[in-house]
Length: 354
Image (tube, rainbow, N blue to C red; front, side, top):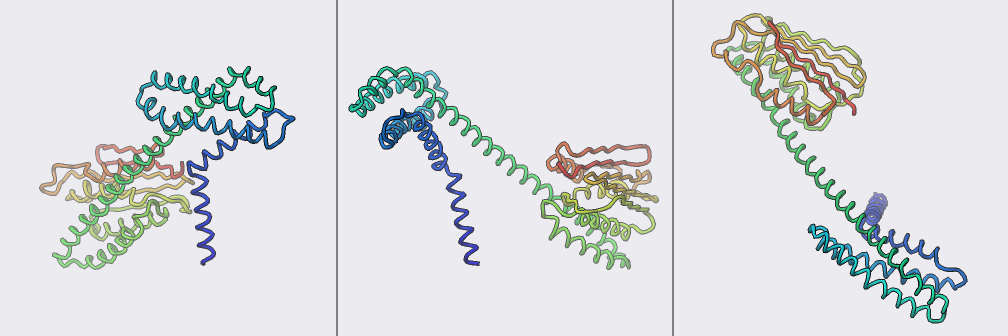
């Protein structure tokens, strides 16, 4: 156990180092050093060639970090583009002759190199300009990527907050309706009340311990739906015909918990519960590999419970469900809700995988 923790700590520290900005800069300068060393003239000692490459890298480091730490944040980032390029050009005009002088003095024992460094000043300006320009481009790209990551993180956090809020509304909504019905049954001393309490406790166990996960097994969600429909059968008795049909094999698919509940609940809230006549709810779930098809129908009440003439459809449940589908399955679902002469129909097609 101690050894595993030590290995984990070492690997974690190594990952932090490899992903740090200092390490990234070190790698870039090391690559530049190797490139310069490869182009050093042959016929001289390795120590002489290495010292030349190191001196040139130090010179470029001064230019690059002057650009990254001063010119870009003070001028380019502040949209002072003309001043930025003016000062950058001035820095190159001052720094390149200094570089020429340093190497001229260093090459004192080698007149041929002194002549070469003196004659190659245009190439030195071009090389300095290209390296500093590359640092500017990389800085712009790096800042843009960092900003995108921040925006994506903020969007994800906002979406998660909204999803948590929407999910928190599902459970109380269902529980409120069920407890109201249970209260009515207990007042009547209805013999169905104990069975409803037992079924409700089983459902609450799922809601409390499993539905808080981002995804659950599809078979557990379907079992929850079956329990919900059984509970409604106990509540309504023979006055309501409830039919559930499942087609296809339930395998190891995953799904967002309580995603279908608002649609099913809406059938009872705005259909069955408002009706004084015999009514029905039909639910069909068809599984096709990573595709789920939901077909839901419920009767439209014509003989309404007194006081329920208004607010026949809608409510927070459907608004909640639509929003969750949009956030969790963008471009991967198709929802159709329509009202016909005698019934409401919901068709939902859901693609479980991207």
